[in-house]
Image (cartoon, rainbow, N blue to C red):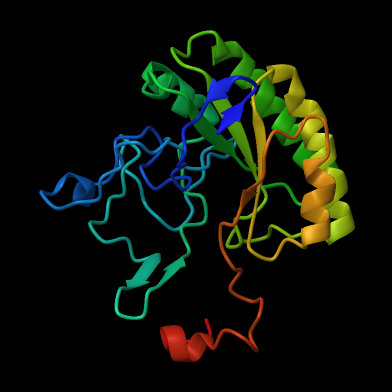
Length: 233
């Protein structure tokens, strides 16, 4: 996939599957662990400020728990449940850590605002963009930005209606366009096709990332949560 003349490869990893900086998790380094060679790294979604969320982290941004309790995976059923809620060190500490800056191949950062109103979301994104600008020249390789609208388990965060979402995305794309890098809005599986088409035609939109998840409270008549996970909570 070429965006603005940058070769991002044929396969992009899911945001966070290799952690904040691409080092992966402990089970990735087992003899028969997953192999990410050939896949483009996409950093775990960061927020503007540090966020505790539901997954306690060490100083190196790795989970404190060997098997985080906020993640459920059933390999027999082929299902997973994620309630991490964007645990992370915040954007500034992530940049200052330096590991992201040393990647020698094109990759993507991912950012999500936690604000509850369009105006507050725009302010948070603007602050992130200004911070990104300060570090941009220090990156060794080209980088793109995924703007995440899909995390469904952030307490207090309200998912806007489709029309409001489209306006928010277009405003955010305009704000982030000053970075001069590929911009990729990221959505969950329930984004209406018409909305995806509309957003994709925005001159500041380089690609779309679909899909991340299905929010827990959506599609209850189709997804039997008690049958799948043994609980409605």
